Image (cartoon, rainbow, N blue to C red; front, side, top):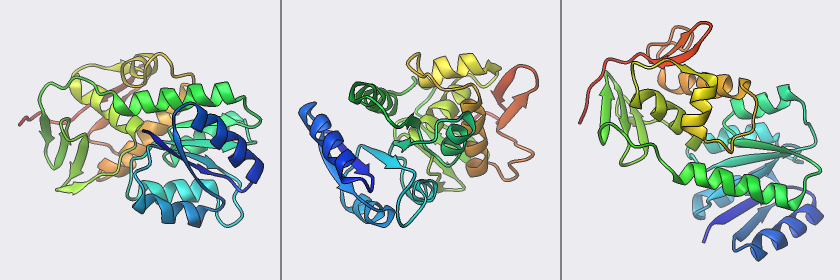
Length: 231
């Protein structure tokens, strides 16, 4: 059974969302503060986090950053801010999706199910494990390592990197990368891809401003630039 952690300081929202998701077969945990959420995560096997941005003790973005230090659990941000820049900022700190308040419970369920599907699916790799210098992409373990250390990519970041690694000579447009990595249920802005790529670069590149792996092909999109190896 998938466990959803709802992080919101409004008891009514937690009550309504918890009751609805429970009726749909999920187990729901809740936290009213960012610190409480961060204390729960190491001790519970959580499948997805619904994270409000306006918490009494911490900004939701900071909570997401803390989660991403150790976990790739999917995060959907809940917020009253609905501007494109707000969404891009949320994605840039590691969120997988973004839903604005007020939202319908059916729309929330659709987002939860879509993100869970994307995190569970995987692209078919060329090999079980690919190495590119000091970077290792292990499809079987669904893990990325840099100099032997685990890189905490989000599910969407792993899928984007996987698509590029799977076809290392192909230049992907943003639309092609959305379709190949995130699926046709993705309904975000094209800039979301740019935010994800920027975030991946921060994690795997020695110099994110002069990337060796995730290359920009100006006027077209992105390609993978690593020297190929396999295992």
